[in-house]
Length: 345
Ligand code: TLP
Picture (cartoon, rainbow, N blue to C red):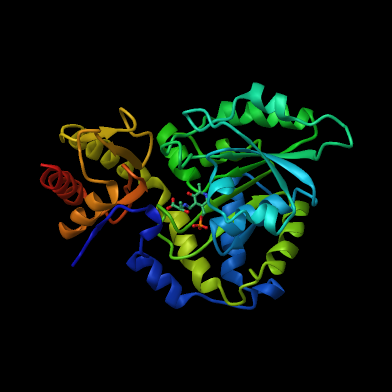
């Protein structure tokens, strides 16, 4: 059965143009720095983020891990949102592998961290305390509904951090969605942070990989850390080739996914038994929950939807996440609305 797979934009498969680029990729040993396709991707990525250098990594998780560790020593503290991917879904890597302590602040509904909370969280120079080193932001913000932060907000946090000799790392897994939603260039969102990770293998459809970008000196540190965690990938130009196609051809179409997310939300709003998380989805994610009158649990509803050819993400006992991406068209959106209607009738 062909499923309409809305569980995540990570499920996207490479496009025919990517497969062709992969088949023809010129490769070399990237641990020697000799893979021309990886080098090209890294340069392209760094340019798009307005940074000196880029580093191709296996995943967003690896980019954030190496990204945080390149800023921090063991025992340092990172200020992070309590709904941040880095905090919730990266197996605690920064503390397990890096000995980095986390200070979790409440994410505001739009995914931001309040400047006042950050200010109060910065540690005094006291031997009782860990040393505050880094602030992590996320844009778009996954668990806050695919919401986005503005260039102005990121600039404000960066200015605040730099005045206190702190660094800022941006988990920009979906930075191009954040840019598309605000009709700004991704560079404007990354301009003032010290480092940024973004993913090629989500809405941009590449099969594998993310890029960590920052200053030359910072990326040199990150290179050693990437090796340490087993991320020196040799002839991975085959993967980077798809990443180049992703950056050159896929970033400009993300607003189509956002428009479909809005259509999906407005259709589902009319389905009795569903409550939408947001009036209008901010980017490519639709969050919903079951009305208290519905007896079934989310898992059961998801199983029934599967029988109708629809796959959704279950995010709690009564809640779902539906993510739009390149492989979901208008027909898929209509099928999803119809399937929810018949499952919840
Ligand atoms: N997010 C995945 C799951 O891990 C939840 C998804 O389906 O959305 N930062 C953000 C903001 C992310 O959403 C993700 C993946 C990552 C980092 C990690 O990327 P990968 O999966 O490449 O390690």
